[in-house]
Image (cartoon, rainbow, N blue to C red):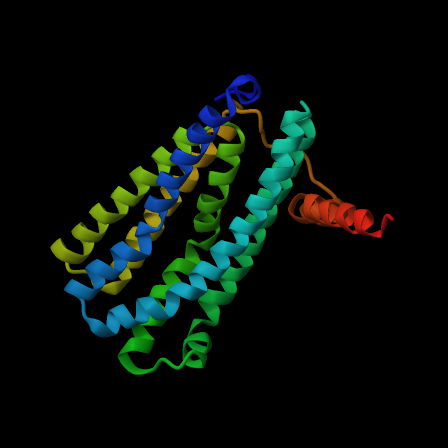
Length: 258
């Protein structure tokens, strides 16, 4: 879809064209943990499955933070694109994606080097603790690309590329299943292979998602040059919280009126 179609398509038709690909894509993106659980539980063992269940909430917290920034900023970006301000929309996109990459890299480094105390703090020891530590460290190494994978999904939809977003999620989920089967069932590489399969799939999805932006074929493009730290913080807060705070302020003002 292009910007013109967003403004001229009937509401119900637009609703279906936007929501159905999003729902299908989100359903397939949830298959990563399910697929790992199936293969790990059947072909590696209960302790390995317990390690995956122990670590997965930590991974989901980090990716959810990245998705939160992307979701909030995509609202702001959509408003700017609706007003025809592609330059400001691209600036918010660039700043927020850079912020997500930097923060996820920091989380990845902390997770890699502090994996053992984190796992011990959660109560795991012995074989389960070793499994969990290795699994988490693999994800920590790939954390920036994993977070970009979940984030760019929002920006593609803001550009009207719902089907592309859905296709990427479906293909990468299927690739994860294939890699799990090859590495775990055929090659018998153990639990770390499950983490490697998921991370490779997400990383390829992240690169695939970034490619249209790099080619400058979408309304959003990467802006050049360094951006001041003060503006970076301001842009992120405005992108994520600006509209919600404005709505809250308007509601409070209305309540005060006689």
